[in-house]
Length: 183
Image (cartoon, rainbow, N blue to C red; front, side, top):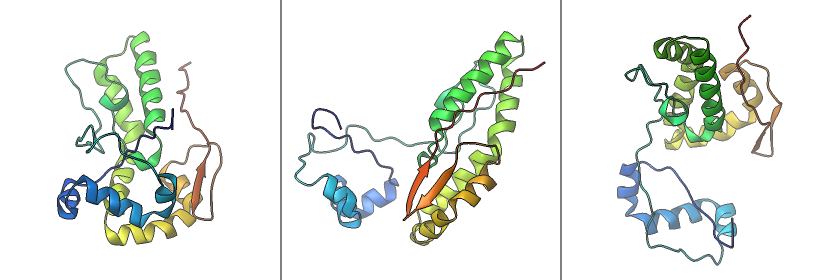
């Protein structure tokens, strides 16, 4: 929220958008389904008749060897939005690329290491993302959130700031992964 303007971003499958009828109907559906969002947007007026941007998001994308380029951030890996790890992956990929480039290693070696470090978590997050967009998946999400500390350790066993689920609200510590320097 800035200068009394809020930016509403959401992810929806194209087929769902078509089925529901369009942007106006989707927004009405979101407001009907989520009373917190409805409360926050009470009295708000849209600045535009429709979204400014629509785009496919390649969740689960993990770069291969794009012609010797050293891709970082979303050009290297795209993790589903709900994980909150996009910025962490962007910083991590930049740190790994920098370290390896300065050590004289190749872009191919960089992608091999990045895939080894991110592959498992990316695959699991993408699978969970696909499950959570189904009706049954959304219903199971609340149960899953009640177990998020255990689930979080299963997905990524590295030590980090503690996380907890309280009253259905997920609160997570900030995490930035910094690779260890080689001796």
